[in-house]
Image (cartoon, rainbow, N blue to C red; front, top):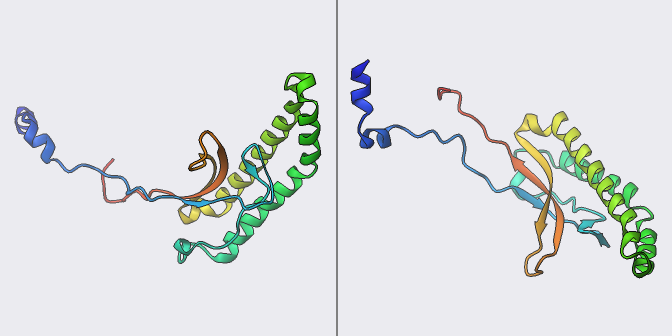
Length: 165
């Protein structure tokens, strides 16, 4: 027992032990909104062009079908939001901003619906392929404090089976 302690007592020996790196971090694929209008950072449509970096990992038809599902959810939830926004802006001065509350609720409902759709897609297909969809808020470059919602397609880390726990 004391032999094991004597071997690891010096700091040089601890640094010499192999460090375990579970995975190399791969940058996610960012899919930005390309819709005609954006309300509170959420675009009315996402681009369904197949990224070249996914070649060999995913079929283009599966990618396009997923983005079309998300666009359908956006179309369903964004319908009529322009009128709510117009009414909210018109009455904003009279109501001290409270007239924008319905728009904020509709926006959070749309975000929730998109996240549920992405969770379903992840469970059915993408997690099995080592991929993971996520809706994320990102700051717009060169725009100060403005943010937008983007779709991120991340690669899940693969743990090596030959490394001990």
